[in-house]
Length: 364
Image (tube, rainbow, N blue to C red):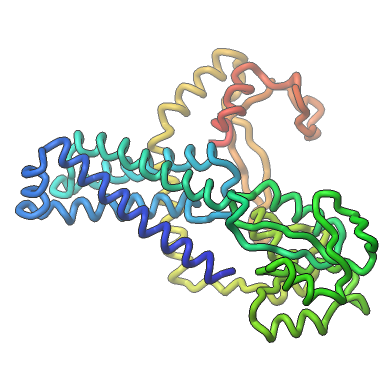
C-alpha cells in the first residue's frame, strides 16, 4: 500500500507542476501575448521566477495536506483547502517580491494565474475523486474477523469510496449459513476457507481484525497467502488509521505502539519543521489581522467585557500552556468557576459567537 500511495502522490505532484507552471505560462501569454511571454522567459530569464512561484505553490499544497488521499473528507473540503493553499502561496510570494522585486512575475500575471491554477487543480482532483470512487476501480478488500473495529472500518471505507478501496466481504468462524453480524458487508464464509475466498473474489488486500487471536487466528492460510505474495495483509488498526486519519482506541494494543514505524526526529528535522511552522504562523497572523480586528470590535460592541477567553491546556510531555481564543460566550458563562461542556443550541453563546464559531474565527 505504501508503494501505491507513493506512486499516486508522485503522479499528483507531477500533474500539479504541469498545471501550476502551465497556468503561469498561460497567464503570461494572456498578459503579454505569445511573443512577449517567450521573450520574458528566454531573454529576461523569467523561467526562474515562474519556477519559484511553482515551488512555493507546491509547498503550500503540501502544508495544507492536499497530497494525502485519505484525510480529505469531501470535495467541498478539498476545494476550500485548494483556495486557501494557493492564496497563502501568493501571499508568501508577495512578501518575497517586496524584498526581491527582480523575482516578480507581475501583478496582472499573478491574478490571472491564480484563477487558472485553481480551476486546473480543482478539475484534476475532482477527476481523481470520481475515478477512485467509481465501482470498477480501487483495491478489493477482504476483512478477516468481526467486532467493533471491523464494523467501524467497514462504515469508514463505505463513506470514503474516493480513497480507492472496495470491501468485498468478511470471513469469520463465528458466523455461519451466510448470517452476518455486519449487515453492510457480506459474510463470505469461515476463516479456514480464506484462500478459496480470496481467489474467487479477486481480493487484493486482507485486513485482519480478529478480536481474540488465541486459537482463532487463521495463521496457516494467512501465512500461505503472504508467502505467495499475491495479496497484501494488514492489521485492522493500522488500516483504520490510514483511512480515517484517526486511531481506533478500543482496538489499540501496546504492541501497536511498540512496533509502530515512527522514527526519531533528528535535530535538523525539528529545526526545519519548527521554522516552517513559525513562518506559516507569521504569514497566517499577517493575513488574518484585519479579520481579528473586526472580530474584536464586534465582540466588544455586542456584550462588552473581555475580547479574549483564556484556558489552560496540556501539551507535549505534560507541559501546561495558556490558550487564548476570541470569546464566543457570555461573560458569566462559567459563573461558578467550573467548566461546563458546550451543548447544542447553547444559550450561553452570543450572536457574534455563533458566527465566529461557524467560520472558525474564534480559534484563529
